[in-house]
Picture 1 (cartoon, rainbow, N blue to C red):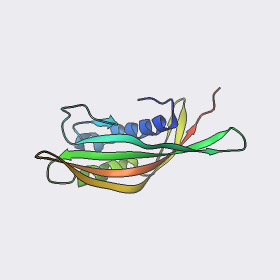
Picture 2 (picture 1 turned 120 degrees about the horizontal axis):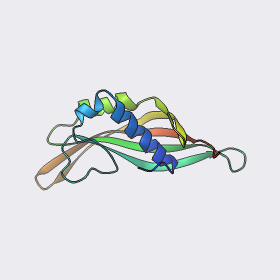
Picture 3 (picture 1 turned 90 degrees about the horizontal axis):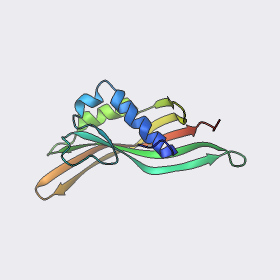
Length: 144
């Protein structure tokens, strides 16, 4: 996972918060993954992705104040039921968080903008996805 971009910092923040939470990892034995889970991953698991890499907010001149990104977070299960408890745990862990990421930047806000809930079918298998889209604001530390 790269932290070279603001969207990379935002994804890192989300993954770090979820992995450090006391409940989320236990509810997701398949792990927490950036963009996609490897084949054969057990269910349920979490996917985190940069849905919108970011919009820069500029000051006077070339100085970037912050970047607003949209990060998607969804629990994936196989079966006939939506992962309500797992999705609630991820939202409880993430909503209204902020973080100082050593070195490259700071997440000043992480707030859910809307929920996500859908099913998809592949032959006889049903996969259910539930989670949210989060507005994550990132301030990059100025270069020394």
